Length: 315
Image 1 (tube, one colour):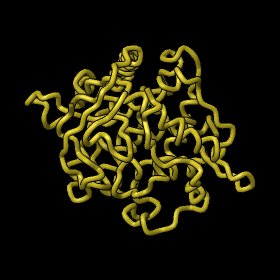
Image 2: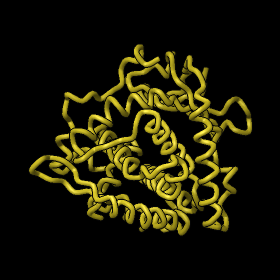
Image 3: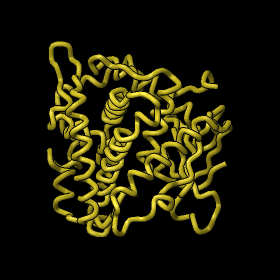
Image 4: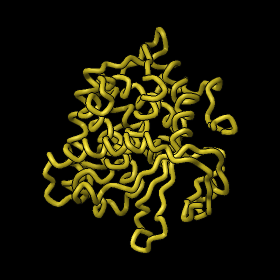
């Protein structure tokens, strides 16, 4: 039973939620290996004022859900929940994370994977076992990415909190890709970084499809990731077959340069520059009322589900 869950479907009220689940120890060992490899990269940066790696990590557990209850049993099934665990010193940080790994996997297969097949040329993902590892490690990298390096920007953006949160999500997304780019061979014992990129882009399309870029920071981040990948010509749209082409070498270069640019942006605390990154294609807060680029309008293919509504078959 989890407390202090903010309900997105009930005006962010704090409600109780519960889950009946089993721990996935194999995935937990994969996360431990990811952490060990990531710490080496983190230490290479030699951040002056950032926290030591062990302090920025959350307590991360992987669970296979049998059933949800309370606030967790909502229309949009959660893939994770942050909680304090009841320790007074952790009540404000919510330093523990339960990841519902089978829900995450099935959501990807049923929604994001179908978007990938429909809209990405030569879409390919790893086999099911490795795909679960990829998804969990990407989420772990995203979690670590929020605290990767110094953050002197937050205090300068008190009047632009939504823009700040969108930028934080963008930084975490790109940092996670950067980490996987560096360690994927050793982590998965084979070169699957292209499949990792394709999985990320498919998830990106799912978040864009959800919309509400200003209200939901992860949707805003996905839209910006798409715009920057397109500007970098790492992602291009072919009108003849209505699919996106991925230039993997350019994605590599983009991840390498943009991740370090975002780390510097947070460290240097330049508010105007930060707002420029978020609002480069017009103010993000106005995107709800403006039409998306033509190639994104086709994401509303109703033959692909929007929600993972039933989990009775996911046991």
